[in-house]
Image (cartoon, rainbow, N blue to C red; front, side, top):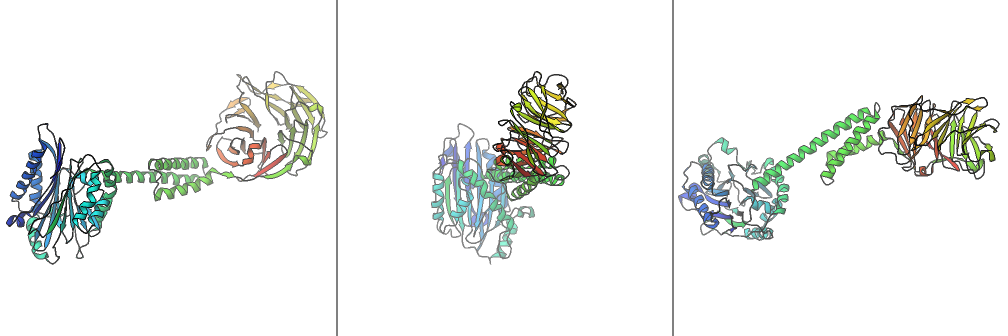
Length: 635
């Protein structure tokens, strides 16, 4: 009996003839399902007719070999009913002589035949489900054969099938499989037959081989044999691999399908060679599609994986060769590789596989060298201003070679420090300097800027020697001395960089450094000079000016953009540009083409107000207020 719906039907059929027909045709087992293509098809009567025609066609076929009998029967059955139903048939014939047996398995439209031998479970039919497919091979005692429609094998994963086929009795096999499909709601197209081979002995070879010559028509047919055995009766590694390869695809298919019923068929008296159990379950798709889809999916995944391996490895090898010649390009290639690995990992639930995991480790190692990110747990305390003036808190400083002037606006005083010797002294202090905001140093003179004026201080005497008034200033954001001249950065939407030339009696009158149209400097926060003028903006842009005109320059290669840069430093004595990014507690090093070189990360950077760098001493000097800290340059 079977299960039917309004337009679908499934059934199993087992027939063991007697006398000469048993010798010439063997025992027939079949699992069938169909879907009606026309409204007038009455599925129950039509199903009975199909089974009747199957038996008639097969046992009346007089082809020389059972192989041909099965193949021709499947083709003829499909052709006869093709206009009324979408038919799927899978059959198995057990042909025996004395105590030896051969299995012939075939299908039309879909289905599969599995052979369980000892601990191995093997699909016997190829994954291509188009047309009639027939294979043959020798059987051994206690082999178990499962003949089923495609949906049966979608509902019952290979691992579950194998486990249940390991039960001692066939009744136990049924008891294990039936609950799996009863939980599903659509079960009108599933059918399966389970058979166990008994009474086969290896010694009955000669008579069997003589008969097989008649039954198996050609060498081409023989190449389809599912079981090639050595003298020790072992399955080939290829067959084992085929069995193992099916498991994953069928596991995925099981989750979508529905319930069914179980039908047990007992062999009658005199049927000693095999015990047969038929299971009627739900069917929608042929196992050929499941198996073929599973294989294609595995092949597609492997091809995708290999493509990623090759792509990432190529970029990794190229990056390694560029580490010294072009570190920026090397870093870019490595970051592209990391991004590709992340993309693949996210698409495959975090899985990378052994090859990509190993590549990822190698990329990280090279990337760490190329990135040159130096994380410092602490900085070295280099100077304490309390040693020179109690309560001194530096808020701004400027450098001329090894001499640094530090300004404390609260005490209106200037302290001088020698970077090589740490010698220090108070240069100037007093009410005359009140209102000062910034300090600059150029040659033998220093400048305190603020309150709309510039106080010129003689370095040797520490006396104010001149005062120069500003003209139409907005907000002066920075002051830098360079080659006896003073430059002021006016932070204004119609901003300007003002230049004062050093003269004998102090400074010249104010003149504009920037030429041409007005510049929006409202976001400018810091300035550095090495012959060119470098202006840092609060969003992280750096603009280079040469002889008063904007020059081409762009920052490149940063792993993350600046968040709150506050100071920029360079000078004729240093080869690089240094930018203090308080928000990300780092000093970023760029070459003067704008390319990233390295970065120094220290948590205490959040409290740093200004920086100076001596590449000769290989130190970064960091002003925190009452103290100066240093970090060692590693490049």
